Image (cartoon, rainbow, N blue to C red):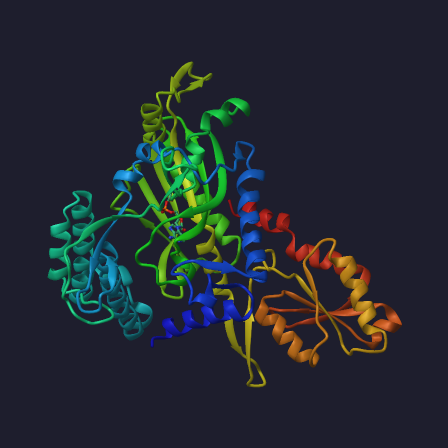
Amino acid sequence: MTNQDNQFKKVISHAKEYGYVVQSSEIYDGLGAVYDYLQNGVELKKNIREYWWKSMVQMHDNIVGIDSAIFMHPTTWKASGHIDAFNDPLIDNKDSKKRYRADVLVEEYAEKLLIKAQKEITKAAKRFGESFDEEQYKTTNPRVLNYLSKREEALQKIGKYLEANDLVAVKALIEELEIACPVSGSKNWTDVKQFNLMFGTKIGASADSNMDLYLRPETAQGIFVNYLNVQKSGRMKIPFGIAQTGKAFRNEIVARQFIFRMREFEQMEMQFFVRPGEQMKWYETWKERRLAWHLSLGLGEENYRFHKHDKLAHYADAAADIEFNFPFGFKELEGIHSRTDFDLSSHEKHSGKKLQYFDPETNKSYIPYVVETSIGLDRMFLAIFSKSLQEEILENGTTRTVLRLPAVLAPIKVAVLPLVKKDGLPKIAHEIITDLRLDFNVVYDEKDAVGRRYRRQDAAGTPFCVTVDHQTLEDNTVTIRYRDSMEQKRLQINDLKTVVKDEVSISNWLQKTREKK
Ligand code: GAP
């Protein structure tokens, strides 16, 4: 097992042990790619959602939110192109009987070539020391050039074949690249087939009046079909945005990465309606703004990168992902798409209803263009959770497991601990809790020695522990211990709330995003 696999296993078991995430219906051996959030998980998820919502809706005077239904008229999905084009190209390995996305197999092959090239570059950098010129090495070293050009060629070919829906060529490419099944190691593949990812269901009580429906595969369409309702009732002027968070459903085939790829998940999407011709300017603006939002959480700039799409979805004229360094490598965290007027024009055509906007500045009517930002809440959860989970060797040689969640997102902000279970200390601890819980999620913990309690809270992600001891009885002071630095300070009980608020308040964190813009 690789280091990466090991780290990922730790993330999954920690999520269960500390009440964050478990597989759905676990007692029945679980349901594939469906997960439940437990007492801490639901709080972390709620806090991420709120952090996104405030930065999107509250911080912009031209963005409003909605909450549209999961069920939508079935023609929506014809108009959006999902019935015809929301497919994954699938291939089975005849020996392991495992099913894969053909494009993912090729992308993984390409990623391995990139890693090989990077290894060569790192080795050379060590060898040449300060005089090393990375750019020159990349463009002249035959081995690196070979890896990078093979990678480029494979990605270009898969993009071209999928664009042309040439599944025979996709299979031939997999064979030509000699890609083997990661489970059986064999290259014994079936033909590639397209598979629609939407879940179907029915609405209505009787067989005659039943109507075939789909569970929405993205929240965006609920925004498109309501854009004029919002524009008119809110007297919105272009450019303006509509934000929404909510469940989406996809019958994912490759679903082996915990909450990275789920069949039921939550999206946080924003559609920004702009004048035709201005979409590229807004596309670049939103790429920048979204990256600034991610960086405000302090998980490390080096863990993010943009990936420009060569193969575009059926609705886009430009698209990029913000990729994050997950325990299994850099993968898509958020998509920023310039969706043109594809969706609105198509809804106009299929519904027969005018979806034009009258622009009072230009005196013209037109169908707006749309720039979308779309992030999976569960995927964001995984990014934060996995990067925050760390093991540290302390000065005394012991290991500490610490979940360094950004304080603004942590499920529990403060644990209040009486040093001992007697002498009136628990009573004071409870009084502190009664006061703090008006503002924060707080827990009480009196079991075990205080050192063990600190470690328990470190692993659960609680940023502050407050200890009540015998000195408290004399001077009304307590100790506050910081999870990340393990520093301890003595302060007046009356000052506790202000100190904690300063560290966890959403407005202070959002202020950082503003400064970074
Ligand atoms: N409205 C555009 C749209 O849905 P997408 O790239 O298919 O675009 C957007 O999805 C985001 O939703 C992704 O960047 C990812 O964070 C999240 N997402 C997509 N499929 C997912 C899945 N099966 N499980 C968890 N998150 C998913």
